[in-house]
Amino acid sequence: KDNAMNAQPAYLLAIDQGTTSSRSIIFNEFGHIVSVAQKPFRQFYPQPGWVEHDPLEIWETQQYCIHTAMTKAGLKPHQIQAFGITNQRETMLLWERTSGRPVHAAIVWQDRRSSALCQRWREQGHEAMVQERTGLLLDPYFSGTKLAWLFQQNPALRQRAAQGELCFGTIDSWLIWQLTDKRDHVIDRSNASRTLMMNLSSGQWDETMLALLDIPQAVLPRIVNSVLQPGEICTSTFGIPITGIAGDQQAALFGQAAISTGMAKNTYGTGCFMLMQVGNEIRRSKHRLLSTCAWSQSTSDGRLAIDYALEGSVFVAGAALQWLRDELGLINHAQESEAIAASVADTGGCYLVPAFTGLGAPHWDPEARGALIGITRGTNRAHLVRAALESIAFQSAEVLLAMN
Image 1 (cartoon, rainbow, N blue to C red):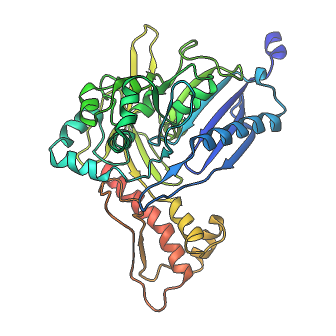
Image 2 (image 1 turned 180 degrees about the vertical axis):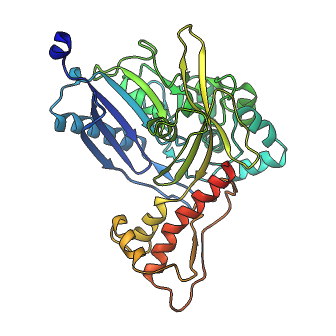
Image 3 (image 1 turned 90 degrees about the horizontal axis):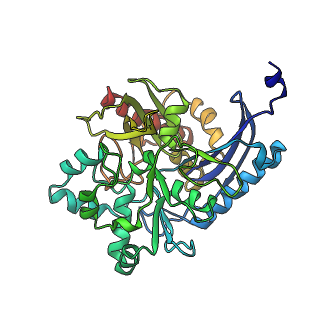
């Protein structure tokens, strides 16, 4: 009791690097939020179906959020016990190992530029092998196809990668590289399982997949557990140890306490992502859902323990409301959508299929494009807003049916 009374309060810092903004949240030992900082960053659309981010802007906004959250909480780094990192998953980056300078914009998970490559591999009959080894499908969604496209477009980059001059990573890799002052080039296993390059059974890079994608292993980060033991990676430049890493959807699965087999969650953000925890054995879907790593850790006797999940991905959810706001000007803020939609009894027969970047599960059609149908002379703004909201529900329900 005396020790408890004299103990200093414990704080955790969570980094949440998302598709449209960076966030940092400080929690106390009871799980209560002490402070939050958030900063949006720019989205770039150089061609139809292409989406890019500026890697340096991602790092700058994340630094801002870390410092701002600590300032708001009135805390110094030494008062924070640990960092946790979660991130947009399939977005890929490539940077110089020596300087840390990005050699290309970050290619975002929504980007479809590798669609033709995926189609070619499917036509060559590789998809069954790919799904068996990785749990994934041949789709531009996954970062390995984006890296393969980049190397095909610029063979000099592939040559530099093979010589060990370049580093590939997902957002967690990029942040940890920066946070450890270029000392650690790593990727957490839940993020690695989304690259199309990790063998789902072994939890390590798969040589057959690297050969198919024509990606040299020298460019890849070291795979680490989601739950990190002391010393697995360097302490951050803030002096705070990094003890947990997980892709955003796996982090949400854990955060929603879906830690027993059969429990599932659906999260609503830029896209919607439904994950079901399936335990320590891989479950294969017959309805074009993904098998993926939920998280991994080391057991007390040093063995690798991987928990798996089934996943269905909806690419456009909240992004449909951003489209109403930014491209059509039908709303000023996403928060308005509920009241506007509730002002009509139904959509009047109007339906939106928001396949702006193709369709995810269970269709996996990268060439699909959006459709707005059932429009009559009486269709108004409220009907369109309601149709956009209902499209999120329809897509999620379709994934749930496939999962069941």
